[in-house]
Amino acid sequence: MSIDFLNDERFSDINPFPNKIWLSSPTMHGDEQNWVDDAIRTNWVSTVGANINEVETECARKIGRNYSVALSSGTAALHLGIRLCGQKLYGRPRPGHGTLEGHRAFASDMTFDATVNPIAYEGGEAVFIDTEYDTWNMDPDALEKAFELYPDVKLVVLAHLYGTPGKIDRIRQICDRHGALIVEDAAESFGASFAGVQTGKKGDVSVISFNGNKIITGSSGGMLLTDSKEDAFLVRKWSTQSRENAKWYQHEELGYNYRMSNIIAGVVRGQLPYLEEHIRAKKAIYDRYREGLSDLPVRMNPFDEKNSVPNYWLSCMLIDKEAMCQQERGDKEAKYSSEPGRSCPTEILEALDAFNAEGRPIWKPMHMQPIYRDHLFVTKDGLYKSGSCMVDAGADIFERGLCLPSDNKMTVYQQERIIDIIHRCFR
Ligand SMILES: Cc1ncc(COP(=O)(O)O)c(C=O)c1O
Image (cartoon, rainbow, N blue to C red):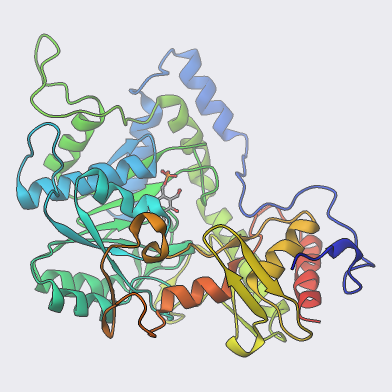
């Protein structure tokens, strides 16, 4: 059923926002313009220049890594990071072949597909690892189980979702025990830390993103981080078409056009000093939702309050099972029936949209995606068999959770109105 929210009696006395409230939009400060102008004025607009050098130094310093390579996107950084690990594990492939051909890699299940697609770019097969309720990230118990089932696997790709660190220390220990490498996808969690250590520090290679909706942005862009000088050199070379140091275009390896431009780096350079300010604004949003929704049968996206400091990139909520109205999701459409005292993500997202505010469903788990449905999927109870009655954590969080408008330019008044709309959904 689709509701005409503007005329529904629960909402009929309120009006839509005149200007859209975004999920998470870029927040420019003016400094970005100076560094972009600087690049243009000095004619350093291509893939070399002071802005690139500066953002590489600053990101490595912030995360505590020795080296970083500025790239065109987080996805490009994931691709080269996964390729690098594949080559370390299985050797250099012939042109036309990926580094992971014939090999499996364990990967986060509830994440954006950019985390896992590069496994396929490299010819590998992702085995998805279930999510845990504590942090909404990779479940270390499910990962242990996966290594029991598939001890030959030597690569783990894990994401820290919505700015909340996953249990990276435990996952690192598990991987060390099994001699596996980690590609750490910190695209959404730049500036977040676990046990005092920044996300992006513990992966054999790690990745952050400067996509337009991230905690800070370059309009686009990404960064690969490593402690190995040789690895940084190799990735930088691959990202600029793998030109050898020769007097002509000499190629010994497959190359890519993945380097960040000095213009994009200018935007990132202008944003970097505002990272902590953005995190403070996002935390205030999270705290206001937590307080304002505390009388409803919902919880905020959780984090380990003792050990982790999220960057609070997106505020999300999970509806208690008993407070869910009926909701059915097919591959592309969702249906629900509104019930007094209950609601569901689809109803809340539609209500927010009707009042000109942008929310988003939780990332639909990879094992539920048509493209990856035939892949192996491991929960802490073992190998998931499709058709079994086992309900995995990722599918459950997807069913009951949603991302709330988390734009750091949203005013307190606007957020209070959003909180009010959510309350009205439960009437
Ligand atoms: C978890 C995650 N991984 C990877 C990416 C890819 O980053 P990019 O958009 O910079 O390619 C994103 C975001 O876009 C993301 O949210």
